[in-house]
Length: 277
Image 1 (cartoon, rainbow, N blue to C red):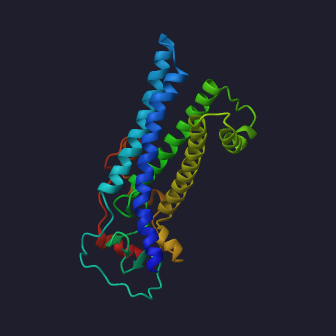
Image 2: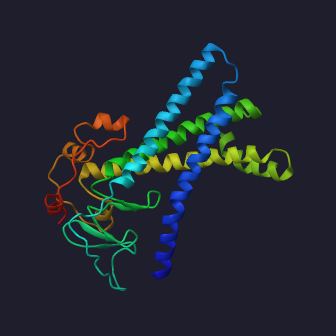
Image 3: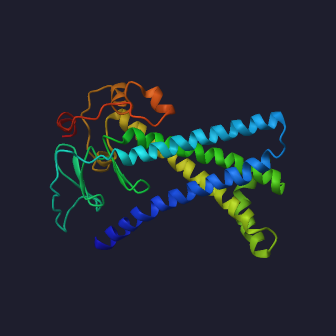
């Protein structure tokens, strides 16, 4: 168990660094390579296209980073419990958490009691629960949008700069292995190989975030958490799915779709804790 916890703590430190590194690289590639290469001439029509693509990118990135910060700013720990419970070495629960009562978990990574814990997110370095679920879902949505948008611009850049045609669907499947072979043969530069690698990074992160977002929305609509599903607990939630979504996204959910702002009141732990047992 000690080795597994050490690996999880290491992942808890490496994942946020990976996220910020990927974000920085995406910013640099967008403004230093993609936009200047795809829209090189200062024509009026191209100026409007440049402004449009820059605005869209900044909007998506602002919401992704904004919801990322809000996920960390509103942690999910319980305000009513300060004492740290002691887990025995033979704890039968998952290695990263220990189930308590009234919908509470003790996260062994955060070293805090989490109310309505869903899971521990390594990219944010904290647990996702009652207070930050909405921000986490929106973070996944906009991160997926940023990655897919960057993927499209990256493909356009490779087409313009290196005359790579993507008309054949198999081109993308063979692009990485062929680019790696050409790089070691000295045919292409390291920058081109790096750009090809980033295409796959954006595609992978975008698909994972989109799939994870769909799963979280489904769980929220059912009034269930990931921890409960893993434990095989059947939730006796008689609230309709619209009410469950409203509890997370609030009545001003449209505002929350376009801005990373608080749109819902915080949960009452005493009331909602009874729903978990």
